[in-house]
Image (cartoon, rainbow, N blue to C red):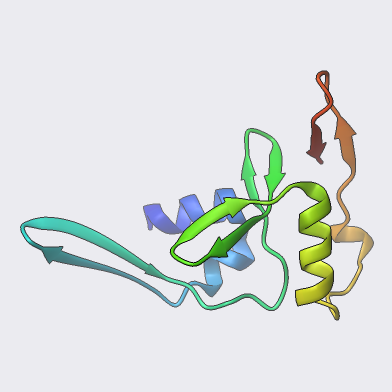
Length: 102
Protein backbone atom coordinates (compact mmCIF):
# COMPACT_ATOMS: atom_id res chain seq x y z
CA UNK A 1 0.00 0.00 0.00
CA UNK A 2 2.84 2.38 0.77
CA UNK A 3 4.28 2.01 -2.76
CA UNK A 4 0.86 2.66 -4.27
CA UNK A 5 0.57 5.83 -2.18
CA UNK A 6 3.98 7.01 -3.41
CA UNK A 7 3.05 6.31 -7.04
CA UNK A 8 -0.28 8.10 -6.60
CA UNK A 9 1.40 11.12 -5.00
CA UNK A 10 4.15 11.45 -7.62
CA UNK A 11 2.48 10.12 -10.80
CA UNK A 12 -1.24 10.52 -10.13
CA UNK A 13 -3.91 8.04 -9.09
CA UNK A 14 -4.66 6.83 -12.64
CA UNK A 15 -1.01 5.96 -13.31
CA UNK A 16 -0.65 4.28 -9.92
CA UNK A 17 -3.72 2.14 -10.58
CA UNK A 18 -2.29 1.02 -13.94
CA UNK A 19 0.81 -0.63 -12.46
CA UNK A 20 0.26 -4.34 -12.98
CA UNK A 21 2.69 -5.59 -10.41
CA UNK A 22 5.02 -5.06 -7.53
CA UNK A 23 7.04 -8.13 -6.54
CA UNK A 24 9.53 -8.64 -3.76
CA UNK A 25 12.35 -11.13 -4.19
CA UNK A 26 15.55 -12.08 -2.50
CA UNK A 27 18.61 -12.19 -4.73
CA UNK A 28 22.07 -12.93 -3.32
CA UNK A 29 20.78 -12.22 0.19
CA UNK A 30 19.35 -8.81 -0.78
CA UNK A 31 15.66 -7.91 -0.78
CA UNK A 32 14.69 -6.56 -4.19
CA UNK A 33 11.48 -4.72 -5.13
CA UNK A 34 10.56 -5.19 -8.80
CA UNK A 35 8.00 -2.78 -10.25
CA UNK A 36 6.53 -3.74 -13.63
CA UNK A 37 4.85 -1.05 -15.71
CA UNK A 38 3.45 -1.27 -19.22
CA UNK A 39 3.74 1.68 -21.61
CA UNK A 40 1.01 4.25 -21.02
CA UNK A 41 -1.49 5.33 -23.66
CA UNK A 42 -1.09 8.93 -22.45
CA UNK A 43 1.77 11.05 -21.11
CA UNK A 44 2.52 10.63 -17.39
CA UNK A 45 4.36 13.37 -15.53
CA UNK A 46 6.11 12.99 -12.19
CA UNK A 47 5.29 15.64 -9.62
CA UNK A 48 8.37 16.73 -7.67
CA UNK A 49 8.61 19.86 -5.52
CA UNK A 50 5.57 21.38 -7.26
CA UNK A 51 7.07 20.76 -10.69
CA UNK A 52 5.75 18.34 -13.34
CA UNK A 53 8.63 16.46 -14.95
CA UNK A 54 8.42 14.20 -18.01
CA UNK A 55 10.93 11.34 -17.93
CA UNK A 56 11.94 9.18 -20.88
CA UNK A 57 13.24 5.64 -20.62
CA UNK A 58 16.38 5.29 -22.76
CA UNK A 59 17.93 1.83 -22.82
CA UNK A 60 18.49 0.83 -19.21
CA UNK A 61 18.35 4.43 -17.97
CA UNK A 62 15.82 7.20 -17.46
CA UNK A 63 16.31 10.90 -18.11
CA UNK A 64 14.15 14.00 -17.71
CA UNK A 65 13.22 15.86 -20.88
CA UNK A 66 13.30 19.62 -21.28
CA UNK A 67 9.89 21.17 -21.99
CA UNK A 68 10.56 21.49 -25.73
CA UNK A 69 11.74 17.86 -25.98
CA UNK A 70 8.77 16.62 -23.91
CA UNK A 71 6.26 18.44 -26.12
CA UNK A 72 7.88 16.98 -29.24
CA UNK A 73 8.02 13.46 -27.78
CA UNK A 74 4.39 13.54 -26.60
CA UNK A 75 3.28 14.85 -30.01
CA UNK A 76 5.06 12.00 -31.79
CA UNK A 77 4.20 9.15 -29.42
CA UNK A 78 0.72 10.16 -28.24
CA UNK A 79 -0.75 11.91 -31.31
CA UNK A 80 -4.33 11.09 -30.34
CA UNK A 81 -3.91 12.24 -26.75
CA UNK A 82 -6.92 14.49 -26.17
CA UNK A 83 -6.34 18.10 -25.33
CA UNK A 84 -8.76 18.64 -22.48
CA UNK A 85 -8.90 21.84 -20.45
CA UNK A 86 -9.15 19.83 -17.22
CA UNK A 87 -5.71 18.34 -17.94
CA UNK A 88 -4.09 21.52 -19.21
CA UNK A 89 -1.35 22.90 -17.01
CA UNK A 90 0.01 26.42 -17.12
CA UNK A 91 3.73 27.05 -17.22
CA UNK A 92 5.07 29.72 -14.91
CA UNK A 93 8.55 31.21 -15.31
CA UNK A 94 10.50 31.21 -12.06
CA UNK A 95 13.31 33.54 -11.01
CA UNK A 96 16.38 32.27 -12.82
CA UNK A 97 14.39 31.38 -15.96
CA UNK A 98 13.18 27.85 -15.21
CA UNK A 99 9.62 26.84 -16.13
CA UNK A 100 7.32 25.22 -13.60
CA UNK A 101 4.14 23.52 -14.78
CA UNK A 102 1.09 24.24 -12.60
